Image (cartoon, rainbow, N blue to C red; front, side, top):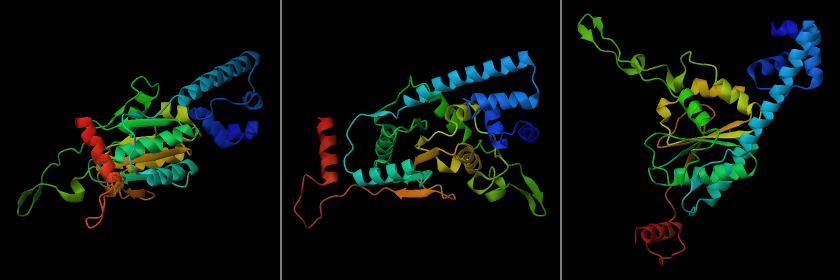
Length: 290
């Protein structure tokens, strides 16, 4: 067991667990030696273990190089206004003060553009960005389809999605047949709690490990997200931050809600100003339409 190996090798249980799960990809030579000593490996088995550790280290370095290039999509147009919001969100996520932020607002209010700016700032600060756009979501940006971790972001989003709810069978009552509805017909329980605390994708654990990173779920349907799985993902990956854009709050523990209001417009009783963010945005749309 992990505990027995830890006792024999004088290595912590957590270190052994991280090696088994692929979260620690570059074990030190001393760690490999202690494990070999604890297992009482012979010369050939010891050499094989040391070779596997070297290959894992080389593969880990390659994955870290891929992460360095993992950037958010490229916006097609500059962001108008929202500088304060972008600064606050980027700092909260970068510092780890918040690990789950949901940006909520009306359709077209600028949630995706704010998320793009926030993600770009975090990427500039050294954090790899895994970006997933929900199918059917309109995005004014150029995705990195060739990004080495685009498929990984899609895998992660699929892992966090609740399964389709099965049709509830009818049950008999004294007054006749009655169909289930309400909570008993729902898949799982509120927030997705229902024993679905499944193991996160192994490739995600291996790629990120303890490294700081940002996962963006753009246009997410929060009612279809599995909070139990997200909770485990955040536990397994202590450096992961999650930024969600949605039409409605998720209303789960630990969620930091960012309510995005429309851009500021000139006062009706004041002098119109072309510097007002709403006016600048309107003029930019007019220029593009011409």
